[in-house]
Length: 273
Image (cartoon, rainbow, N blue to C red; front, side):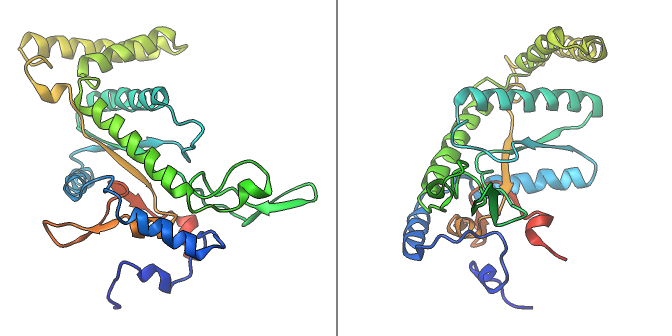
């Protein structure tokens, strides 16, 4: 078996790396990103791995959700808040129904790139490079927008960092209080066409929370009831960027991709066949 190196991926066929044209500019951008702070820490990743081991053993439930691809245009604190609320609402119902802790894994704060079936897109008589995600090129069907631009990686990093910062604040600043999440669910049920279907379940959750409160188990006395762990994930499609975000953990000497807590390469990207 060949020894792995941080740039070993360059020795194999890669189907989804854009043609930037200006290699010098790309290397300049990646060189700067290598010196940027990590977006996540190795200790957090190890914590997630422990939780995923519990999922495999049937001791926890995994909830992963988020956009197919994040965009620069839709970047807004309200959108991040609403997304986070939905994930917490779903996890509360799953926790109660399954009687298991829920590992919350967001497809967020870095899910920009899009694998495409064809390298080009044609509209009428005009053929241009396919849209590959906001961190690579623009969605507008113009020659200028569709040209891959390495400097978009700066904006992608900045948006991911800002998103993570807000999510961390939501996780530990009281926004994720168990009582608040339950009230959000009640508000949703009142507006839902399927209110009757969910009301019975929410009534049971309300009774459970009331019992816990009567026993003195509430967020006023137990901080764990108003904080959550929330992890980020994305497909590691743009390998030059992932390489620039891969750092050595000072405590173990091991390599960690610090762009997210969990990264993967999908079947369409791998093209095993």
